[in-house]
Length: 285
Ligand SMILES: NC(=O)c1ccc[n+]([C@@H]2O[C@H](COP(=O)([O-])OP(=O)(O)OC[C@H]3O[C@@H](n4cnc5c(N)ncnc54)[C@H](O)[C@@H]3O)[C@@H](O)[C@H]2O)c1
Figure 1 (cartoon, helix red, strand yellow):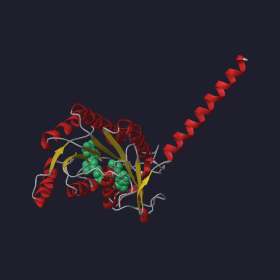
Figure 2 (tube, protein in one colour; figure 1 turned 30 degrees about the horizontal axis):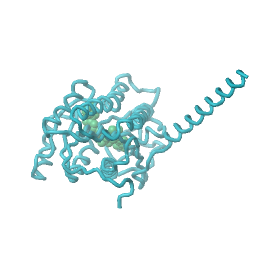
Figure 3 (tube, protein in one colour; figure 1 turned 45 degrees about the vertical axis):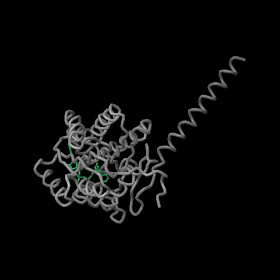
């Protein structure tokens, strides 16, 4: 039973631009989207031959040209324009953008995080999603189309995490961007997924996460859980501006704390305005 909204957005026949498509989550997500009837424009920085081989394997298994691969470095501005126009050229249209590419922060805050590494985390995890979404929104507007954007955030963007301070700060910004992007709805529905650690090389091979007190192996997610939640988020027409946290067995928790904080600030601001107004009135008398 579908509990989250009455109308379900259908993925069948849609074209998806997926960044980080050759990563652990990206590869599994490509397959799940295809099972749902989508065509996938796969984008990654990895070698063209490697990407083409993976894309062709999928096409051969399914007997249809439903994926295509383009090698692109998301740190390069021209590539961000190119991946959107290339996806449209290859498949005729574009409906869904998944900003999934990301790099982790392997260093402790103020210890050995290097300037270039911080720049790369900001560029790939935040600037590329902002810029690609901007280009996608412009494409949708120019063609009077509607679209969906999913930002792959992290639970580290909600709860501070020792060793992932810079990464967490950037993912928090992505979550806030998602909230602010609610204003684009209904023409563009933007939402985010915030997983806890996923059983991927990004986590399992990160030396800083070994013997780390914030890592609970029993709460770690399977890649499949993240893919299912992403698909569910695309299909959920009530997801605009929302972020869904995934941890342990709970894989579609709506994050409310930012909304509560905003409500708190609004109440305090109203109270402050009221007091100022009353004081002015009293002085007039
Ligand atoms: N693995 C986890 O535990 C976890 C938890 C929460 C959120 N996430 C997020 O999920 C997303 C996918 O993570 P993953 O575990 O599959 O990681 P991954 O490292 O397996 O995949 C990331 C992909 O992004 C690509 N990429 C990196 N830099 C790029 C660039 N400059 N241009 C284009 N592509 C680039 C990589 O080549 C890689 O294929 C990331 O945004 C990550 O922050 C992961």
